[in-house]
Image (cartoon, rainbow over all chains, first blue to last red; front, side, top):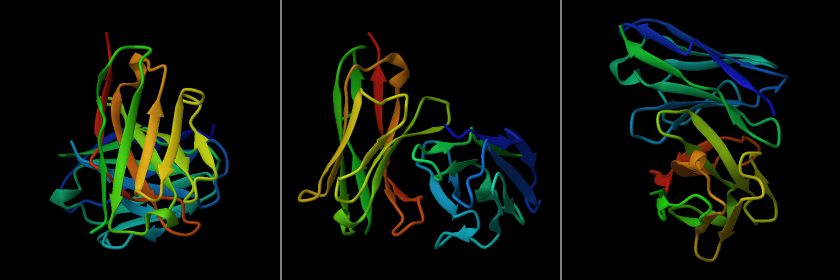
Length: 107
Length: 120
């Protein structure tokens, strides 16, 4: 199976900060990489698919980049509603896998 | 409105079985691949299984292969997950998820989830 490793596992940031989360795949996954946001008690919400395509309705402060094994999710200016847990997901192989998650907390 | 509603969760003893339905509405169900994803209490997301729109192809995570079966009834717009030989580590919230159209493999709609607890 392809392993997905996110870093950091958690971070503290302030409103207005630029935040970057990294996801690394154990082998090349081309651009088959998605990002989700999950708030407590809620289902996840798709932010970015195919590494860099913004899902409809998602604010433009979210962006994704990367190819192969290394990917990043960037929030250009953190807003109060962005405090949540973020997951990457690879859909390159037959068996899909998620990263372990990155919790973004208020500083 | 696009909607996915899971049901069927509950408490089951180890070794038992449970069937989870997911009722879909607001979109052409048969045109979309679907998946099940689970989340153990306080843990991350785990993809469990997916099925193509026609139901012709099915895939499973190693952790559930041979015990779980995904299926769909396109005439009733319903996705199913049959879970057999349940173990305590199957305890989780189970979500059904709709795939994006085309080759972009991602989940653009999720249900609210149903909790399955495996315990004696």
